[in-house]
View (tube, helix red, strand yellow):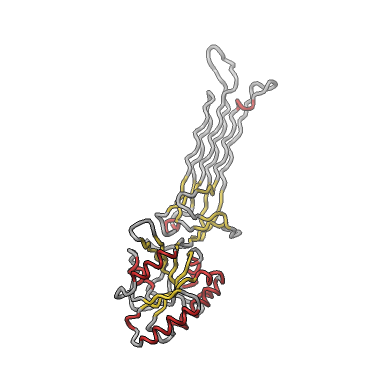
Length: 330
């Protein structure tokens, strides 16, 4: 299944209410009986419901119209029409529903089982029995059912995660996610292997758990449209904390310069994201020949106030310490 995080337009249409019935009671004993037309049933609603079992909006590329069932018409003998069935549309957590024209946010799906009525069904019409009065005991009219509410909207997915891995391409974010969780992101020795966010869940086989999002690599100018970052920077907004992953063995750019690039891109997109950076992971320490250089990088980032953990995703070095840190701080 493809990762799709934007759907430009879908239309939700509530069901129309059924028409009221104009009818009169006719029996042998009462050949001129009174009005007995029943009311029409209300139209069904289009209901959005959040689910943690979905991670993409792909299905909605092929279902641009969500239509609930119409209510049934009223019938004679006072029988009311059946209410139309609701249409329940399941959305992945983190979905933002916006008005298609104004782009105003209508709703944000943040919890499993959370519900929101997007297209309200129309009210059923009244049967002629409703209109009987002392001065008009035989009304011959009934009211029609109302149309259901129609709402055109766009969908935007922002992944929910406890922690987001951010860094430049080929820093080893995907390898770390594989080492920490059961997620299976693509890993290869070339830039932009990760072309979509990938979620993994870290647990201690008990009650503690940490959802980690591996984001595509950021390059200079990502917040202005360069590379792949601009499409996925919004997913970082929903991460409660961020960890910057750096290639400790890379000399161009150096870990210090790579950190500056990532920090500048986060700030250019949303300055508030800088406050969520909690730690720096120096990955690929198995490739660092000069031990003093590793110590220099560690000390530099500690002076900036960050927790610093040096790891090797390839060989599992210090991964256990990293697990303890992540579960303790998220």
